Amino acid sequence: MESRPDQDAEAETARPITVRYWASARAAAGVETDALPVSDPITLADVVRRAAALHPGTRLPGVLEACSVLVGDQPVKSRAPDGVLVKPGQVVEFLPPFAGG
Image (tube, rainbow, N blue to C red; front, side, top):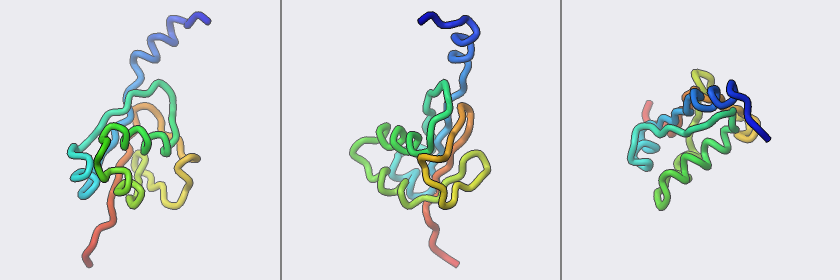
């Protein structure tokens, strides 16, 4: 199947999903952010899998499971990660639970 020129241009200009880690998630990843190249929306579950795969041998997968998540500026809350779409160019933030009062 042949691609159209406008599809090629769109794929080349698609912005990555930025994954931002906070607190213990940042410590587990060893970086503040990761960029996930995408050309189409992917599920939050895929974002988590891909982010964890970027940091093999770390405790990041377990930390991400405990995190609250923002997609853009919207909290995911209790929605299933397989049902949350993340579009190219969006920011996904992982916020571990915070102690204190």
